[in-house]
Image (cartoon, rainbow, N blue to C red):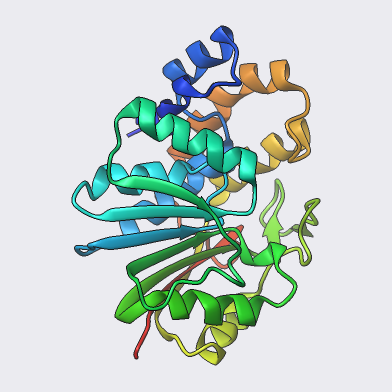
Length: 260
Protein backbone atom coordinates (compact mmCIF):
# COMPACT_ATOMS: atom_id res chain seq x y z
CA UNK A 1 0.00 0.00 0.00
CA UNK A 2 1.04 3.61 -0.56
CA UNK A 3 0.01 4.78 2.90
CA UNK A 4 1.85 2.16 4.96
CA UNK A 5 3.43 4.80 7.20
CA UNK A 6 6.77 2.98 7.53
CA UNK A 7 8.86 4.78 10.13
CA UNK A 8 5.92 6.27 12.00
CA UNK A 9 7.63 5.21 15.23
CA UNK A 10 9.79 8.32 14.84
CA UNK A 11 6.99 10.40 16.33
CA UNK A 12 8.81 9.40 19.53
CA UNK A 13 12.19 10.64 18.29
CA UNK A 14 13.51 12.93 21.07
CA UNK A 15 15.27 15.33 18.68
CA UNK A 16 12.41 16.06 16.26
CA UNK A 17 10.29 19.17 16.51
CA UNK A 18 6.51 18.96 16.91
CA UNK A 19 6.11 19.93 13.25
CA UNK A 20 8.52 17.17 12.17
CA UNK A 21 6.70 14.62 14.33
CA UNK A 22 3.37 15.65 12.82
CA UNK A 23 4.86 15.21 9.34
CA UNK A 24 6.16 11.73 10.22
CA UNK A 25 2.74 10.80 11.61
CA UNK A 26 1.13 11.87 8.32
CA UNK A 27 3.62 10.40 5.85
CA UNK A 28 5.95 8.00 7.67
CA UNK A 29 9.72 8.23 7.26
CA UNK A 30 10.31 10.84 4.52
CA UNK A 31 13.17 9.17 2.64
CA UNK A 32 12.28 8.18 -0.90
CA UNK A 33 15.04 5.60 -1.32
CA UNK A 34 14.26 4.00 2.03
CA UNK A 35 10.59 3.63 1.16
CA UNK A 36 11.49 2.07 -2.19
CA UNK A 37 13.81 -0.42 -0.52
CA UNK A 38 11.17 -1.30 2.07
CA UNK A 39 8.64 -2.07 -0.67
CA UNK A 40 11.16 -4.14 -2.62
CA UNK A 41 13.00 -5.99 0.17
CA UNK A 42 10.39 -6.81 2.82
CA UNK A 43 8.29 -9.06 0.51
CA UNK A 44 11.45 -11.07 -0.23
CA UNK A 45 11.85 -11.99 3.44
CA UNK A 46 9.95 -15.25 3.81
CA UNK A 47 9.89 -17.84 6.59
CA UNK A 48 9.75 -18.04 10.36
CA UNK A 49 12.62 -16.70 12.43
CA UNK A 50 13.41 -16.83 16.14
CA UNK A 51 16.37 -14.44 16.04
CA UNK A 52 17.10 -11.57 13.64
CA UNK A 53 19.98 -9.11 13.31
CA UNK A 54 20.02 -5.93 11.22
CA UNK A 55 23.68 -5.09 10.60
CA UNK A 56 24.39 -1.40 10.08
CA UNK A 57 20.84 -0.54 11.09
CA UNK A 58 21.22 3.26 11.14
CA UNK A 59 17.90 4.80 12.15
CA UNK A 60 16.47 1.29 12.43
CA UNK A 61 13.58 1.63 9.98
CA UNK A 62 14.02 -1.97 8.78
CA UNK A 63 14.74 -3.18 12.30
CA UNK A 64 11.52 -1.75 13.71
CA UNK A 65 9.56 -3.24 10.83
CA UNK A 66 11.07 -6.69 11.33
CA UNK A 67 10.32 -6.55 15.06
CA UNK A 68 6.67 -5.82 14.27
CA UNK A 69 6.45 -8.53 11.63
CA UNK A 70 8.09 -11.14 13.87
CA UNK A 71 6.80 -10.34 17.38
CA UNK A 72 7.98 -13.68 18.78
CA UNK A 73 11.53 -13.26 17.49
CA UNK A 74 14.44 -11.59 19.25
CA UNK A 75 15.44 -8.71 16.97
CA UNK A 76 18.71 -6.80 17.30
CA UNK A 77 19.97 -3.81 15.35
CA UNK A 78 23.67 -2.94 15.43
CA UNK A 79 25.50 0.18 14.32
CA UNK A 80 28.61 2.21 15.20
CA UNK A 81 26.67 5.44 15.80
CA UNK A 82 26.29 5.55 19.59
CA UNK A 83 23.86 8.48 19.59
CA UNK A 84 21.63 6.84 17.01
CA UNK A 85 21.60 3.57 18.95
CA UNK A 86 20.61 5.47 22.10
CA UNK A 87 17.76 7.18 20.24
CA UNK A 88 16.60 3.90 18.66
CA UNK A 89 16.43 2.19 22.06
CA UNK A 90 14.52 5.14 23.48
CA UNK A 91 11.99 4.99 20.65
CA UNK A 92 11.60 1.21 21.03
CA UNK A 93 10.91 1.67 24.75
CA UNK A 94 8.33 4.40 24.17
CA UNK A 95 6.67 2.32 21.47
CA UNK A 96 6.53 -0.69 23.79
CA UNK A 97 8.36 -2.99 21.36
CA UNK A 98 9.72 -5.50 23.84
CA UNK A 99 11.35 -7.95 21.39
CA UNK A 100 13.69 -5.30 19.98
CA UNK A 101 17.05 -3.92 21.11
CA UNK A 102 19.86 -1.90 19.57
CA UNK A 103 23.57 -2.30 20.30
CA UNK A 104 26.75 -0.42 19.43
CA UNK A 105 28.77 -2.97 17.48
CA UNK A 106 31.02 -3.10 14.44
CA UNK A 107 30.05 -5.41 11.56
CA UNK A 108 33.73 -6.37 11.31
CA UNK A 109 33.96 -7.17 15.03
CA UNK A 110 30.43 -7.88 16.29
CA UNK A 111 31.25 -10.81 18.59
CA UNK A 112 28.24 -12.93 17.58
CA UNK A 113 28.86 -16.63 17.01
CA UNK A 114 26.10 -18.42 15.07
CA UNK A 115 23.35 -16.61 16.98
CA UNK A 116 20.75 -15.65 14.37
CA UNK A 117 18.32 -17.27 11.94
CA UNK A 118 18.11 -14.15 9.76
CA UNK A 119 20.67 -11.44 9.02
CA UNK A 120 19.79 -8.31 7.08
CA UNK A 121 22.20 -5.77 5.57
CA UNK A 122 20.67 -2.91 3.60
CA UNK A 123 23.04 -0.56 1.75
CA UNK A 124 26.00 -1.04 4.09
CA UNK A 125 28.72 -2.92 2.21
CA UNK A 126 29.47 0.06 -0.03
CA UNK A 127 30.66 1.86 3.12
CA UNK A 128 33.18 -0.86 4.07
CA UNK A 129 36.62 -1.13 2.45
CA UNK A 130 37.05 -4.84 3.11
CA UNK A 131 33.56 -5.90 2.11
CA UNK A 132 34.37 -9.61 1.68
CA UNK A 133 35.62 -9.76 5.28
CA UNK A 134 32.43 -8.00 6.38
CA UNK A 135 30.34 -10.62 4.55
CA UNK A 136 32.34 -13.38 6.26
CA UNK A 137 31.61 -11.77 9.64
CA UNK A 138 27.91 -11.61 8.78
CA UNK A 139 27.99 -15.30 7.93
CA UNK A 140 29.66 -16.00 11.30
CA UNK A 141 26.70 -14.39 13.05
CA UNK A 142 24.26 -16.78 11.36
CA UNK A 143 23.27 -20.25 12.46
CA UNK A 144 23.83 -23.08 9.95
CA UNK A 145 20.99 -22.86 7.45
CA UNK A 146 20.36 -19.22 8.35
CA UNK A 147 19.19 -16.67 5.81
CA UNK A 148 21.05 -13.55 4.69
CA UNK A 149 19.22 -10.73 2.91
CA UNK A 150 21.70 -8.35 1.29
CA UNK A 151 20.90 -5.15 -0.61
CA UNK A 152 23.51 -2.87 -2.17
CA UNK A 153 23.34 0.04 -4.63
CA UNK A 154 23.99 -0.82 -8.26
CA UNK A 155 27.15 0.58 -9.80
CA UNK A 156 25.22 2.39 -12.52
CA UNK A 157 21.61 3.34 -12.81
CA UNK A 158 19.39 5.16 -15.28
CA UNK A 159 18.84 8.89 -14.93
CA UNK A 160 15.76 10.24 -16.75
CA UNK A 161 16.14 8.26 -19.93
CA UNK A 162 16.60 4.52 -20.24
CA UNK A 163 19.64 4.88 -22.50
CA UNK A 164 21.51 7.12 -20.07
CA UNK A 165 23.27 5.39 -17.16
CA UNK A 166 25.09 7.25 -14.42
CA UNK A 167 27.60 6.32 -11.75
CA UNK A 168 26.40 7.77 -8.43
CA UNK A 169 29.22 8.47 -5.99
CA UNK A 170 27.52 9.26 -2.68
CA UNK A 171 29.51 10.85 0.20
CA UNK A 172 30.57 8.19 2.71
CA UNK A 173 30.78 5.39 0.16
CA UNK A 174 34.14 3.73 -0.43
CA UNK A 175 32.72 2.46 -3.73
CA UNK A 176 29.74 3.82 -5.70
CA UNK A 177 28.04 0.43 -5.96
CA UNK A 178 28.23 -3.08 -7.37
CA UNK A 179 27.68 -4.89 -10.62
CA UNK A 180 25.31 -7.83 -10.08
CA UNK A 181 27.98 -10.43 -10.95
CA UNK A 182 30.48 -8.69 -8.67
CA UNK A 183 28.38 -8.86 -5.51
CA UNK A 184 27.34 -12.44 -6.36
CA UNK A 185 30.99 -13.52 -6.51
CA UNK A 186 31.82 -11.78 -3.23
CA UNK A 187 28.91 -13.43 -1.41
CA UNK A 188 29.99 -16.84 -2.68
CA UNK A 189 33.65 -16.13 -1.87
CA UNK A 190 32.59 -15.46 1.72
CA UNK A 191 30.97 -18.90 1.85
CA UNK A 192 27.30 -18.15 1.24
CA UNK A 193 25.04 -20.18 -1.01
CA UNK A 194 23.41 -17.68 -3.36
CA UNK A 195 19.74 -18.61 -3.74
CA UNK A 196 18.50 -15.63 -5.76
CA UNK A 197 19.81 -12.32 -7.03
CA UNK A 198 17.91 -9.57 -8.80
CA UNK A 199 17.91 -5.85 -9.39
CA UNK A 200 15.61 -3.43 -7.61
CA UNK A 201 14.20 0.01 -8.48
CA UNK A 202 12.05 0.24 -11.61
CA UNK A 203 12.09 3.30 -13.86
CA UNK A 204 9.67 5.45 -11.84
CA UNK A 205 11.31 4.45 -8.56
CA UNK A 206 14.74 5.40 -9.92
CA UNK A 207 13.56 8.77 -11.23
CA UNK A 208 11.90 9.49 -7.86
CA UNK A 209 15.07 8.56 -6.02
CA UNK A 210 17.29 10.59 -8.34
CA UNK A 211 15.17 13.72 -7.88
CA UNK A 212 15.27 13.13 -4.13
CA UNK A 213 19.08 12.99 -4.34
CA UNK A 214 19.19 16.22 -6.34
CA UNK A 215 17.22 17.99 -3.60
CA UNK A 216 18.97 16.60 -0.53
CA UNK A 217 22.43 15.63 -1.79
CA UNK A 218 22.07 12.54 0.45
CA UNK A 219 22.89 14.94 3.30
CA UNK A 220 19.46 16.20 4.45
CA UNK A 221 19.83 19.52 2.60
CA UNK A 222 16.86 21.72 1.60
CA UNK A 223 14.57 20.18 4.21
CA UNK A 224 11.56 22.42 3.53
CA UNK A 225 11.68 21.81 -0.22
CA UNK A 226 12.08 18.09 0.32
CA UNK A 227 9.18 18.01 2.79
CA UNK A 228 6.99 19.50 0.06
CA UNK A 229 8.33 17.18 -2.63
CA UNK A 230 8.40 13.90 -0.71
CA UNK A 231 4.66 13.00 -0.89
CA UNK A 232 4.78 13.45 -4.67
CA UNK A 233 8.06 11.54 -5.04
CA UNK A 234 6.77 8.73 -2.83
CA UNK A 235 3.60 8.48 -4.90
CA UNK A 236 5.60 8.33 -8.15
CA UNK A 237 7.80 5.60 -6.69
CA UNK A 238 4.74 3.70 -5.44
CA UNK A 239 3.30 3.72 -8.96
CA UNK A 240 6.48 2.02 -10.14
CA UNK A 241 6.69 -0.52 -7.34
CA UNK A 242 6.05 -3.50 -9.65
CA UNK A 243 8.04 -2.30 -12.65
CA UNK A 244 10.81 -4.57 -13.89
CA UNK A 245 14.21 -2.87 -13.50
CA UNK A 246 15.10 -4.22 -16.97
CA UNK A 247 18.79 -4.55 -16.27
CA UNK A 248 19.28 -0.96 -15.08
CA UNK A 249 17.91 -1.04 -11.55
CA UNK A 250 19.53 1.18 -8.94
CA UNK A 251 19.94 -1.64 -6.42
CA UNK A 252 20.88 -5.32 -6.21
CA UNK A 253 19.04 -7.69 -3.85
CA UNK A 254 20.59 -11.03 -2.91
CA UNK A 255 19.01 -13.88 -0.91
CA UNK A 256 21.56 -16.27 0.57
CA UNK A 257 21.83 -19.29 2.85
CA UNK A 258 24.61 -20.07 5.30
CA UNK A 259 25.34 -23.69 4.34
CA UNK A 260 27.25 -24.56 7.52
